[in-house]
Image (cartoon, rainbow, N blue to C red; front, side, top):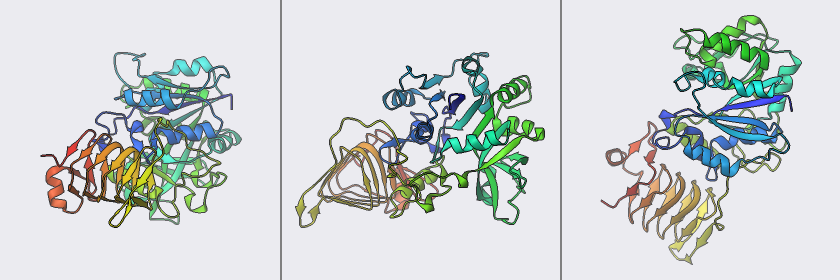
Length: 410
């Protein structure tokens, strides 16, 4: 693995995840109570023993940079590192023009380490993957590029790069976000084969095609729109079937689990997946630990054992530092330091952390960003029309509370 350099693209604005991305980059958004979105791809690399990793940042990067410094320090003595790289305008007075340009502007990093292979992965998806298996697949086929792929419903094809592949796993066609008539999977007309945005490149091929692309004034300098279509005619671009990736200790129902949490509703549903009785994404596999920064806070506490005043949580995930005081939490995820006062009821909600919910509140199908204060007897999620007058509400009816909001005090 010493011949492998990895570059994680973590600079996206994440506009569809607003307001959670109003103050932070999408990969820095809290997820699952105790994590940030970036933690999942980084855990995949660390667990795969691939430890030369650059994280390319750009928009609203302070929160992400702080998290990386707290959670992902790796000693440089062994030649291992996980280093954030802010946009530096190395090739002109412009920010990254696209995903390919982000790597092009950092070709000096590739030159410095002279790797055999370069992994280029997105930093904002929820999944588990033993990346060594994809690299072995790439090496065995002598590929210039290998693209990880999953089937997705045909109605979602316009969100992805759609792949055509032959019986030997070779890519024979690619269309980025087709607007109509996408190529479906043979014998499976309801689905297309979609790129996950995870690539393994032969280093020389990557550098060559990035340089060609940089000289093309008509290019938008994007891997999906430009680099992959340019490389497919070579005949040595392959497709890695993500569903074949095997991780010790994973339940069978988690096979092929991958989520792009780019919208409020997809983010909400991915969180809800975690607290299923048999979750399709398992946080508890000791053979594949999911790492993050854990603040110095005490264990969660559940207090009062009285009639109509019993603190408890059901089918929920409750992080350290929480106090459930004479209230009920049902099918919800609580981040660090959430205090819920007596006689409140929280259902099917995600509360990111550092939040105080007053006495007698009823909250259902909501997402709270951090540092929210809720007045006593506040009701959220029971009257959609009233909620829309006060808050942002997603297409599927999830109420969104922004960071630092004071709710119910007017």
